[in-house]
Length: 439
Image (cartoon, rainbow, N blue to C red; front, side, top):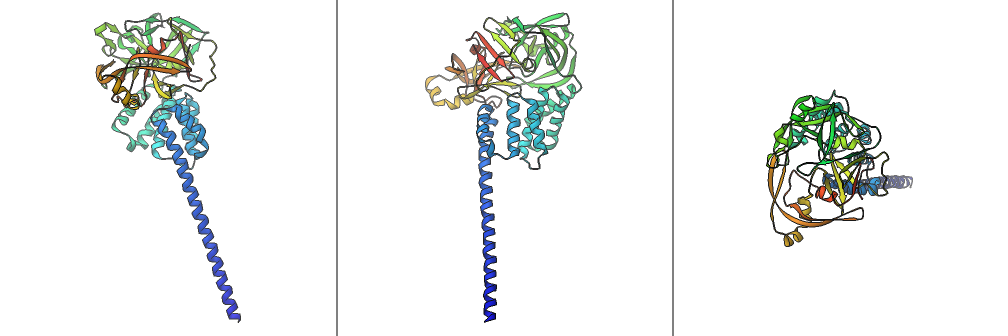
């Protein structure tokens, strides 16, 4: 009997152990299912918002992140914050998020780390920290070369030339001695120019938010006694043809009550900035690094350039972001590049694809001519009419050029030019709160 009793006890212990084992297995299975579910959830949420980042729609990515931030692991939160801070012109905060991510024990895929190092280069350049921009490029080339396309590798090596030339140059500095109000002059091409003074000489420079870096012709640099630094940089023109450029750093230039020091210029041969068919030569262009540093700029219909003493405030979400050095504007749920140096608005292939059926039925396919530094080129396209809406205002345009094929891998819906700006008495560009406002 004792033997039977002991046997039963043993069987009971075996059963309990089995039951405990089964409970453990069940718990592990449930944990795995939960982990997979969480991973799928955060992966899905991240993929949706990152898809918007990849097509440069930082506005939609911002809104998606605000609503889904808690679904992401901390590393992915830092990643998205770094991307969005960069896009909405907070380079210091963006680099801080990148540094925090780099200290985490958890990792993110190399494809995302590659993206972060490209952003770090952009942030550093916007802070005029050229040596850090150089380090970011070197890291990208060393660690993530296998992810690069031939074109990306070429661009990075080209950038490296720039940062090597500039790494020991002092940072750009802007001093504003009160507000500024200057009358701009229209040139032969109808573009608005500011009179810029260097030492005792002065010349008219185009004011152009679409210029990633300020630009100057070789003869103008010589006349203004700005030292040209050989750099052998290749810059892609609108035709897709690479145009050679050098660099120059202007120690001091003034316009109105504004003093700009250590301004970096791309230096082109005169013929690259010449349009002999209209007897037109560009002297120079004030680009984004100078314009952004002013924090707020106002342009009026009667051609006044204003930098106010007191910054304008608005009570609506930012409708301006940055794709590198290119301003973007958000209208009608779509994102466009924004270029005060372009006389006319142009629409790109994403706009056509979204409205293809309607456009094909209503308009006749023809050719669209585009020109810039490096010459002209024709693309298949349409002339269309469209009404934009921004901050409650309607902006009707007629005969807008619409391209049907992609150029330079553009993912924005188009480029907004002066034909939009001219419909209002004043336009405000604020690079602190990141908005474009029309009055």
